[in-house]
Image (tube, rainbow, N blue to C red; front, top):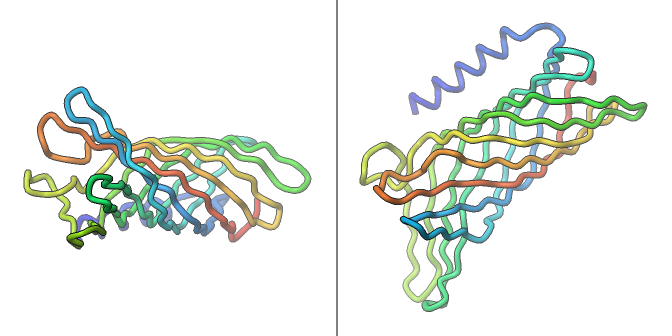
Length: 208
């Protein structure tokens, strides 16, 4: 909890130092998450799991067409898998705070602007759930940390890609893809990486 508060405080302080030409916005929409597991030389990708995301963002103009777009998002990520020999299904879902920092190119038009960009992201997992639906149903809370007994690591570093269109009234539709780059588990000789695709409807509170 202390780590979460420190991260939020850091980004809140960053926003307060942004220049006057900064515009704040809100957005929300569905996510479609997946996870790729690699054990030695074998890799397995899960099915996509539907989740939800919502957050705050800012747009800071650097030039006429280039801007920086930091965000603070609540994101649900995870994975789903069918267990064929048991006729069951298991799902793993994370509730996360995500902090992408996108460098964005804007192409202005009479009706609004097209924007595309990308950049690094940091994700902090708040809590998670494991669920198995089959002959012997199971529900469990996930643990996050650096210890070998923890299910997953708390922090994940990744890269984010963003594309969208914003109308002159500030309303915008955007899509993003986020790929985790760091290993999420503490088990030797094994790697787990998350990714998700998101679609968001948003509003800049003051149009550019």
